[in-house]
Length: 56
Image (cartoon, rainbow, N blue to C red; front, side, top):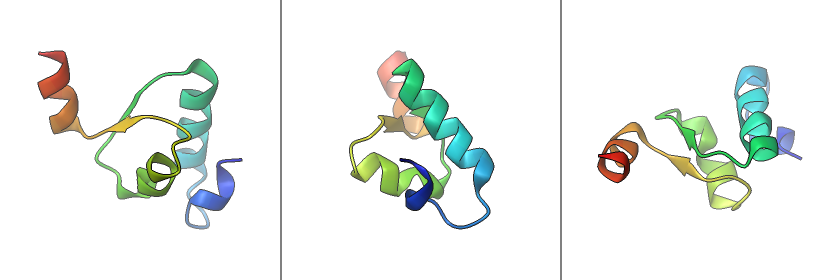
């Protein structure tokens, strides 16, 4: 389900996204490879700055 949303060869990013999906966790990263999956609404992705504001 995640694989088509990532550039070829970004298997670590796919694994991180799939883990976040299965754990229903927020993925915190500044990696732009997660933009498509965030925009698709499959997982919640926060930038590091956004996480700092939300969690502090």
